[in-house]
Length: 396
Image 1 (cartoon, rainbow, N blue to C red):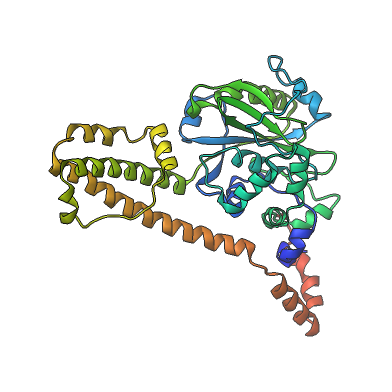
Image 2: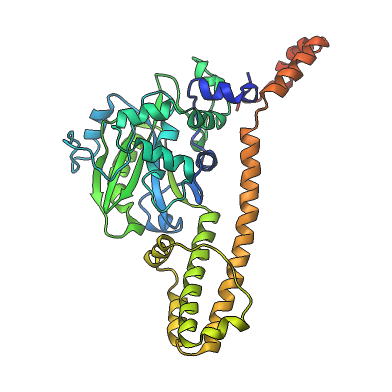
C-alpha cells in the first residue's frame, strides 16, 4: 500500500507511524505544525566549537539513538556528575510531555523543543495547544498529543510508508545515518530533546517521568556547551558498541534570518525617525518612501537582546544632530527591508506549495485510478510485471 492511498482521515485516525531522522523531514514537520523560521541540521562533530558557531542560533538539539534496556537506568548511568533522582516538583517554566504511544517520539521531541522557545513563531494552533495543556501533568500532555488528530495526520504524512506500522519485519539494507528509523521491538530508536530555558539546560526524554536539569549557561548563544558532556558520553558508549545515532540541531532557516534582519532595520529606522522628529517634525513632508510594518515592543526587545545592529547604532550616534545624514541612514534601511520582504514572500510561497503537495489528499484519485485499471482488466498484468520492473531496486 502506498502512503498516497491513505486519506487524511486514515492518517489522522490510524496508528502513529515510523519516521526517518532526515533533517529535511524534520524541517517540513515543523513547518506543517505551524513553526516558522526554523530548520533541522544534522551535526557530525559535537566537540568542535566552530561546527556549532556556523549554525547560528540553536533553539534545541534532538538526539536519536538506539535504546538499550531500561531508560531510567540508562539515564542514571549516563553521566556520573549529574543527578537523575526523581524530583518532588516539576519545573514551572519548562514545557514537557511524556511519550505514551509508539512511534510518536519524533513529533514529541519537536514539540518539547518549540514549545520552550519564545523566540520562535509557532502559529496560533500551537499557541492555543500550549496554553490549553500548560497546567496538565506530562503524561496527560502526552495523551493529548497522541490523540490530537492534526498532529497525527501531519506526522503520518511525513512517512515514506505509513503502512510500516503494520509490518513486523522488513528487508534489511545498509542505511545512511540520516535514514535511521524506529525499528522493531528488538531495535528501538528513540529521540531526546535538549533545550535552554531561563539559564538552565534541560534534557527532555518522553520516556522519563520528568525533565532533567543537566547544567547552567550564562550566554544563550552557547547554551549547548552544557549539553556536550552528557551527549558526548552517550555517543562514546555507542561508538564503542557500534551503535547508530543521529544528532540534529534546530536552527534558524533563511526566513528566520531574514526576519531578524528586517527587525534590526525596523529598530534602526524607528530610532532615526524619533531623532528626526526631535530635530524637525516637518521632515516627513519631504520624505515619501516608507514601509508600513508592525513592530512590537516584544520584537524590539529581541533586537536589543541579539545585539546585531551595533554598526548601525554606531552610525546613528555619529550623525545624531545632522538631518541629512540621518535621512541617509534611514533610506538604506527601507530599501533593505523591501528586498528582504520580497525574498521572504517568495520563500513562503515555495514552502506553501511543498506543504500543499505533502498534505493533498491523493487517496480518492489513486483509488479511482486503480478501480478503473481493475475494471479494464489491466491491473493484474501490471501487478504481475511489478517485480520485474523493480528487480534489484531497494525499497525506500
